[in-house]
Structures are given as C-alpha cells and as structure tokens.
Length: 262
Image (cartoon, rainbow, N blue to C red; front, side, top):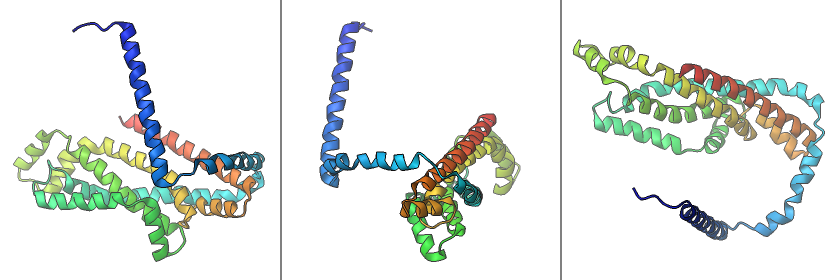
C-alpha cells in the first residue's frame, strides 16, 4: 500500500472538513426556509433566556417539601409502565424471533404491529389517553407501558435471534413444547441482556414521565406546567433541580446494575 505524505493527508482532511461544513450550512439554510424558521426573531428574543435564568437563580427551596409526593409518583409511573410493558413484550418478542417461530406470515404480522406501536410518539399517546382516561397517573402508566412494549419487544427479539441454537435443537429433539424450549434453552441465554434492556428502558421512561406529566398524565410534570404558566420561575427552578437529581440517581443505579449484568 502506497504511503500518503502527512502534509497531503492533512490537506485532504481540511478540504473534506470544509466541504462538510459548507454542505451543512447550505442544508440548514434551505431547511430554515422550508420550515419557516426566523433567525432574526431568535436573535432578538435570545436575551429573554437570560432574564428567565436570572429569575431562577434564587430557587424557592420552601417549595421542595411539596415536591416529594409528585417526584415519587413520577418514579412509580416509570417503574410500573416499564414493568407492565416489558411483561407484555416477552411473549411477543419470542413470537417475532426468526429462529424461534418458523411461520413467516404470523411472525411478520407481529413485527408490523410492533413497528406501528413504535411509530406513535409518547406525547401523542399521552394526549390520546388523557382524552380517554382523564388527567392522572394512570394515563402516564398506560402511555409508558405501551411505549415500553414497542421498544422492548424489538430489543428482545433481536437478542433472541443471536442465541446459540444448539440447546434449542437439543430440547426440541426430546419432543418439548415451545414453552418448555423457551424456558429451558432460550431464557437462560438472554436473561442478563433482557434485564439490561429493561433498565435502559426504565432510564428513558423516568425522563419521559416528566414530560408526560406536563400534558396532564400525572407526576411532577403537572407542577412544572403550573409554575411555568404562573411565571413562578423560582419554584420552576426547584422542580428542575429535583428532576435532575432524581434522573441522575436513577441513571447511576441503572448503569451500575447494567455493568454488573454484562
């Protein structure tokens, strides 16, 4: 292989970098025209960001006592929604795995259903369920459960498709049923990765539950909406700090457990 002089390599790298930067700027410009983004308005009002931060620099810590129950409710929503969605995802992920289910038509129907569920945004689901079930934590749990079901099912069946099929064929040769095959030959191989995916989904849902609460799905997001609507930024600061601390703790615990499972 012919050696490329260092100077030529650096020159080519600079040319490629400049070309990419120009292309990105052109794409941003035309995207702003299509979407109607007004950069003048953005630059004019950007100082308001500093004004809001200035009002938030002195948090109303007396409001912290009122945040205990909503924060706990937010975490409970995430745990319940993730658990219910994961429990429902396990049988569907098995039915969607190519190496377990040989019926292509049935398997593809399951995959299409899972894909359709994953295309629905959390915010859309929350707005729909608020209209059906009303404002409250149950709406948040149902929304997170459905989101978890779609996401975890895909993660799970992709893991199942990577297992060693030797034990599966050996169990099937004894005349075992599908349920026995899954319990004896499949689950022991994927249990650790399943738990890791569950914890990863829980991390996402803890953050998502805050936004869902803003739409009326229960939890601390409802209080965040109230303080923002009332321009009570010192209390908004307390809520944001509380959310940040809770999410950080959950993420730290989840990351630690996932590393232990690897």
